[in-house]
Amino acid sequence: MNQGKYVFTQVTEFLPQRAFDACVKRYKGNHYVKHFTCWNQMLCMMFGQLGNRESLSDLIICIEAHISKAYHLGFGTGVSKNNLAKANERRDWRIYADYAYVLIAQARKCCISESFDLNLEGEVYAFDSTTIDLCINVFWWATFRKTKGAIKVHTLFDVRTSIPCYIHVSEASIHDVNIMDQLTYEVGNFYVFDRGYIDFARLYQIRLAEAFFVIRAKRNFKFKRQYSCKCDKTTGVRCDQIILLEGFYASKDYPEKLRRVKYFDQETNKTFVFLTNNFNLKAEEIAMLYKYRWRIELFFRWMKQHLKVLSFWGTSENAVKTQVYIAIIAYTLVAIVKSKLKSPLTTYEILQILSMSLLDKTTVNELVNKPYLQNVKEQLCNQLSIF
Image 1: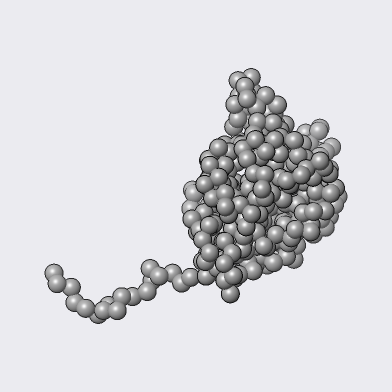
Image 2: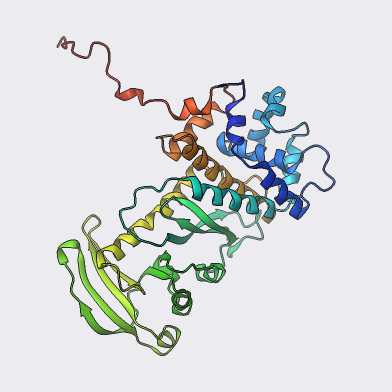
């Protein structure tokens, strides 16, 4: 029953506040704070994310226009542009990073698996990064090139539930393969990489962890074929081979056998070559695993288009990381709302609805579970046309 609460307040009630208080206490985020707490800061930033605000000034103008509602929205009494800017600059970004992982764990438990045709026992993860360009004169710490700054958002993505499991923000000058050292590989799970992550020493660590990897091979890598397996070429598989790496360093980094699968995709008219340490799956299933890797690309595109991570509301490294992790909190919160209210809408559709309804007093359940009225026929659907 609607108790007169705003839509934004109803959505933020899905956030576990006790877990957030533990994160704040861990890093002393509210030390010497009287009015504008870390909770107030996060809710203000989330209001800007969900409300599609373009800048910090844009956000504050909207909040000040509805200042009488600030208490009920959870913003507190000390909200101002100066307070919010200082909070983003000074309060430890790890508060919001730790809290994002709390919500990620909750979302992975309650979110229903999306369409996934493969019958696998282990989980399937895709690991990739996206680059966000910055002005080197303003973001001087974000090293990339001589005349250009940028950051990279490295993400380990759960393919089944479309939830990011691990987020790491770094300068764009750091190569992607270095972040593989920070991952913890679980026994029996599958990890899918693009060919930019070819590093046989690091791939061998996945093999030693008794996990599986699928990675797209580079064109110039050298190998020696041991034997070929039978394959059905009508499925798109061109060859399925067991190989050993050649070359002094490559064979030393990965001394065991590998599986090489060559696959032709009729949709794109392209040929792909994959390497894996799994010898039990069918060759077409190996290709399908890599095809599911594109879900992380869709996540990056969705995040850049609909969450405010391209125009940052602060220039320091702490402010940028704070905004990125609060964007992840907003994404997982929408996923949790979708799951718990059993909404048939997509995450994108729910976000669009929320952006227009944050200050309404309609129940969230009614907003996200309305029937699709466009499919309803008119009353006189059998009326003949005049012409």
